[in-house]
Length: 256
Image (cartoon, rainbow, N blue to C red; front, side, top):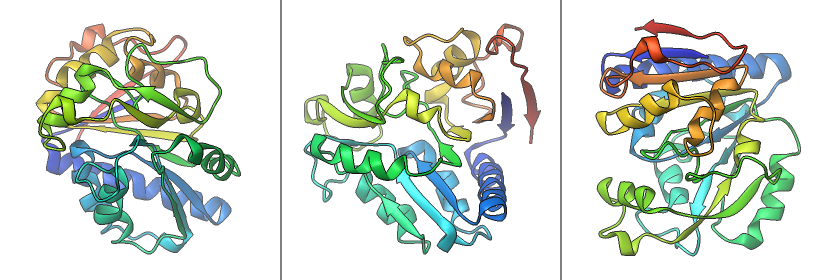
């Protein structure tokens, strides 16, 4: 596990974009193609804004995304398909882009496509309740499915309202189609991008606790290629002496 601390969200965006671009280019050099998974939300914006500027042969990049609300039209401001198309896929000429359509019926075809080859890089955010994708606590660590329908808890819903995607908690859909924890861990490399003070508690809990489905992000610490990008605000609550790497794993901290 590598922890990279940037001064602020802008620096984090630049540093994480450099890192992700290197990972993508290395995969292209190794096997001619890079397959990536992207998360969404306010915390990912600084990275996306920088990543689209990097020197990458996007025609050799295939994208999948993590999750989508059930029964939310793509025209809604909170639609993750809308988010990605406006902020990423319309900005670069990808080989292909595969979206979660928000229907349980779409899971089978998406799973077949996703599992046709390994995912090289997964950009996996961490929510205020330490969820990854929409795997809210207590997350299902056991299923071997690629995508499942999940129920959203109140903490998750409040985050969506606070970020401005919905007017009230009652407006947030009750369910979402989400990539599973099992499938996320199948990525060859996982890069978590987690800026802002509002994520400080989630970062603290993730780093200072052993793996538990009550803090879903803790499971990523055992991944052999896991890099966590934080800024000073999101790292502010962490006691470095209490950081608990996964059993048998080392960790490093770099300030950039």
